[in-house]
Image (tube, rainbow, N blue to C red; front, side):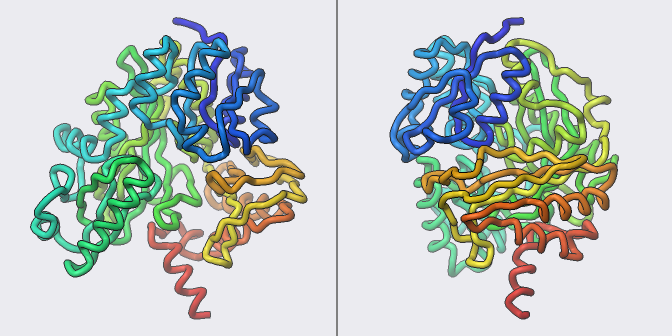
Length: 452
């Protein structure tokens, strides 16, 4: 097994700092990259070395794969960790990292291309008996109305590339198909450089449940306990938890077995996530694969006791996944993550960048905060609005909910609007606290607020 001497982190902010900390524990040097807008970011100062890779806009810095690879070679790094977002699911980036004589800490380009591209991942799922929602066999080009009628209404238009809710539209009647199709294609093209889309039957009131995976180069594939990511706004996750209140042991085993089949069939190596839609009756359908570390990975770390970034690095060095399947599915307690964004929830979640005048973190038993923010830091307007992730753990869900309320109430952030008040409202919602909720929860909460 090879041992990395130095790793470049091709990312910024919270996730870059998260990776630096694990590298430090493993005795591996870290190299940060940063844009001109991120000179004062905490990850830059915490890394052993830092290299400026361009101007503030992401396309001129964090999305410039040539600049990132040049920085890695200049610094003498052995490997590149992509984090999440930016170039993390870019097959060409994985390919060019390897061509430069470096190790990409993630799957190879073939697996990214096959699983990261939703339509090909769907086809692979079908061929290996992983349940999928009814939909088109490939991307939609011509005969859109005919393809839509075959799938049935309501349907979902989905971008073939990328994720994060971009290029997705719900269509409930034929009259709106052409307009929504054009909108989805334009959004997908802008976000991913690829305007291809396909159709799926839209499932009403599902839960969004995902299975965290780890697969090494020795043929070992392991599934970890599921995460419930059903609290979403416009397909963007805001609250995640593990385990799901809707999943029992038998369903967990079925979903895990399906995820393992898919990952084995793809030849995937690394850490990734298989996402499913779950109906109230227990039927589940494959949705997509995220070929990277997830934003919500800390809830899995809490309930398993593992460091998933460490697992990624060990696998990339040629080592084995550190646990077997029977150990991996053992659940210790309950964990919940709240994404704290620089947004105003009372103004349709409008971005609220600016200078942070106060920054006081919650603490105490079972509380973790992953963040790159500090007092006096100015949040740039060029990137995602995520400021921090509050992750709590407790022996059971009821205690985790109480701990979430306590920790959120201790958070002190001055100078900007944040989503903390929104999270406190979620914790007061009976649907959520009872565990009987779905992806439509926030829409219902919004309507209820309007009535009041």
